[in-house]
Image (tube, rainbow, N blue to C red):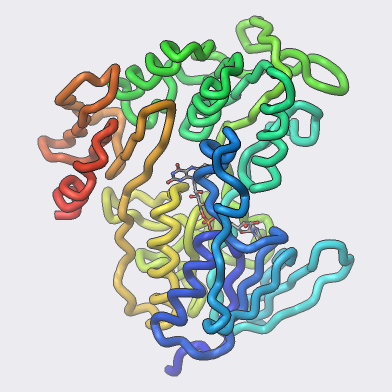
Amino acid sequence: MTGPRDITVVGASISGLRATQALRELGYDGRLRLIGAEPELAYQRPPLSKRFLTGSQTAQSLRFALDPALDIDVQLATRATGLDLAARRLHIRTTGTKNDSRLRFDGLVIATGAEPIDLGLAGRPGVHLLRSLPDATALRDALHRGTPRVLVVGGGLIGCEVAATCRTLGLEVSIVEREPLLMRVLGDRVASALTGLHRTQGVRLHLGVALADLHGAPTVEAAELSDGVIVPADVVVLAVGVRPAVDWLRDSGLPLRNGVLCAANLGVRGLERVTSAGDVTAWPDPLDGATRRVEHWDNAVAQARAAARTLLTGPAAPPFRDPGIFWSDQYDLRLHVLGRPQPTDLVEVDGPIETGGCTARYLRHGRLAAVALLNRPRELGRYRRLLAS
Ligand SMILES: Cc1cc2nc3c(=O)[nH]c(=O)nc-3n(C[C@H](O)[C@H](O)[C@H](O)COP(=O)(O)OP(=O)(O)OC[C@H]3O[C@@H](n4cnc5c(N)ncnc54)[C@H](O)[C@@H]3O)c2cc1C
């Protein structure tokens, strides 16, 4: 069987961009299209909750460039609206137009990422989501207009980063989180330390409760929590998680289960020459065998290359091995997490966890399974090698 000669990549953020670049690097010289719903090509999302919000990093510095020599036909402001697998046709629609057009392909990479859960509150004045550059620009403008009181809904990675950024700006900030601790995915010991860090930095914490209602019309003035507490707020940031961007695939017959369901090599289950990369992808993670979706930058970059390779190689392509790493910046803390901490792991800490400068080692069945480095970036290489082995 010869390889594909007409490949389309859907989603022009980091995994889509890196997939097109990898296809060329791997020697693919056929037709290559990159379709993206946003009006601009990929940019770095991680600074959107950090230095971009403080104003110390500009939009221009976040953008990626695409080498024209790669000969990629880029169609931005164009959304894939459907997929006809039998005819191998993609339905697309350009922003501002009413009709779909059809695009033939013989190879497809799905890289449509994830979209924030909005609790049905999007569009209400004062309520913000944070996924895209326009979202972040609107939030940054709101944070720099006077001294707003901020309520962050959700105490995961992005919620904690936004709260830290707002405190750095000197703003009054509250977090409401359903769980009893912030960033609970890191296990109770590390999560307790991070929760303490936010408390010490002056964030008001409402833990073990949920957002019940918003008051004020048309602009938000306060939030009511499930325990009846009223939190005054001019800016409400919803950081309650994301869901995979698969609505356009619903009628396609493509296997969907918390994302696009893939085999170990990121080939979409049961289909030839269709692969998936990044936040939209669910695959059997060799780190523990569980089928999961990962919502981190390094994973998106690494999966893009693997998805490109599988598209060109076919079903015999080797399994994808996730680097299993993410980072976060909060106040003066740089956190790196390698592997996948589990709530039942035994955690050993070798230093002052409350102030940072330590390593938390997660032991499972007596073996090192994951590591959290708190201001220990130099340890990264060593633990990466240790965990890989
Ligand atoms: C504020 C913020 C901070 C973050 N910080 C960190 C961090 O510190 N560390 C870390 O590891 N990760 C972080 N992340 C996560 C990281 O940015 C994501 O894992 C990464 O962006 C995933 O890349 P992706 O290309 O798979 O998906 P996305 O970046 O979501 O891109 C998907 C693209 O596909 C487009 N699209 C969707 N549907 C369609 C369609 N039907 N047709 C065409 N195009 C479509 C979207 O518009 C989007 O441009 C952060 C994310 C955010 C939002």
